[in-house]
Figure 1 (tube, rainbow, N blue to C red):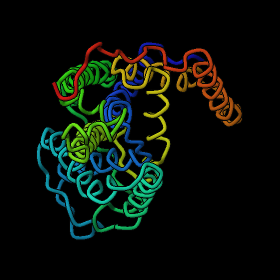
Figure 2 (cartoon, helix red, strand yellow):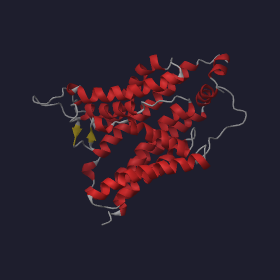
Figure 3 (cartoon, rainbow, N blue to C red):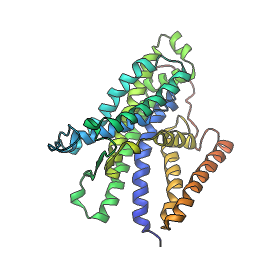
Figure 4 (cartoon, rainbow, N blue to C red):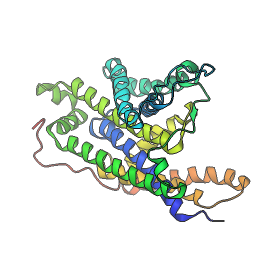
Length: 315
């Protein structure tokens, strides 16, 4: 039996839109600045939990967790990137001074440590149980079927706004300075530009965008549990960026939609549980083959990074 194609597409577009927002932030960190952050999921998770804690009702006397501020949902969407940005600043102070090899290892460890904290600090995150049945924006204004289309449209609007914001950064003198840090940090320093400051700003902005994506992800799934925030979230952004084109924002969005649709396509057909178990490894295999083919024939991604002739540092 085939699922309704309209609802399927709406759901996949919503998911792809959320991940595309996340990939834009990762592209700013890695694609533009050269920061290989393998703990990107940590900021996705911080934004998600910050959004939830700010907006859920105050817990009752028998609840395991202590905090719930009951604020409007829009406060959660604003608070999520702020919380993720603050967390990035705290993490960035010691880690951005490390060499690239150590930075990669430490950032990955940050993601794993945070997931451990989310699982065990019950007073703050409700532990492994997490939060479920979360409210969704404007849910009461639409019927159950129409809402899927509304949410997909909302994600496209947020994605476009994020794209314009990131693209504005990349085309500015600040964005060109980020590229100079990526290409040759020594040259950047010799020209009197403080590379550490540029890296920190890029790290914080990228993390804030991840936090925004995380806040919408938990509204899409209506769940916030530690098991959701695994390294696969980071690698989704990384692989999407590689597929679309490193350092190119259009490529980041296109690569994400291609990747998510490729992964989710097999879910379109409803099959028995036994077949679903068999299909899952094939889905991973197909994704891997797609990545290998793209790297073989399009090593710079589907859309190459646009390099402006005569570009000058910070001008």
